[in-house]
Length: 363
Image (cartoon, rainbow, N blue to C red; front, side):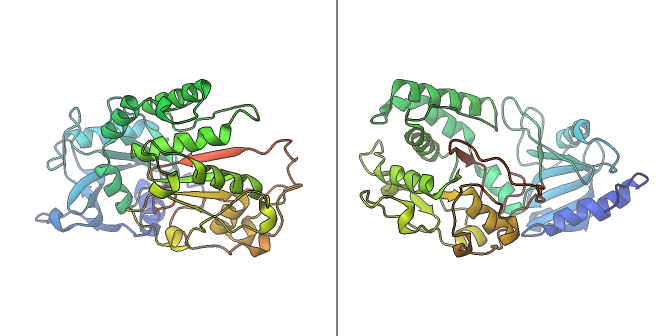
């Protein structure tokens, strides 16, 4: 697509914004507003030029009859970040919004030029805008709207991490710092710990608290070696919950397929392989953890072309399944002209999102 230097706003909407909305799974149905439109029957609809007290909104998003979002569009040459203020005006003037959050009657706002998307959830005490890869789907907005973050926050504040057996003081301090950053709407967090200080146990303890509080329901645990994935699953299996059970007795924990050489013969190991339909046909009622290597997840998302050469890395990529039809937006692949330099020490990364493996675009 061209850079759109002389592209009119109506053309930006048609070629870029409408295309993105219709490409989601399920697709948004784009319809024009007209007098007498019964919005109670709109289930997954984006209504153009929808009237408010403060003028017509470019797109009004309706899910199951609820006026749940507003998209303000500008031509591709305009930076959309400041355009959120215009979306706020329409949200303040909405006639039939589902609530009132400090004067805003619609919860989810977007501003876009067809290439860059800014998003704001107006419900928190201190709303923070951010960029998205793509618009949310209707099921994702319904789930976000139903989620009560106040309850999860209260649970985390009222439940000291020290209740977890074998948690060391510095690990408890790390958990408190991480959760405090989440309360402040931070979305990209890094916890650095020295080797041998129990970082796998700490990560599992943190995940347990996030699941118990219902802050997150689906968590992707990424590592860069199969041996680390196997180690993580063992830690999940051995983790004692506050109810005296093993974590895997209370929550579903899945992994990719392993071979015998991926873990020591002297250590018991009982992995459960994630069913493909958990990724290809996600269900909002599922709560689970998925432990995977970066290479395996890349192949699930992009197929063989998404795999990359890793010096000293795992072999046997050909045994992994090919690309799966996962209903989330896939970023463009960046190709390197030469393999990256190998790292001296394997790392871990935990990704917790609104819905890492359900059809949530840009979550």
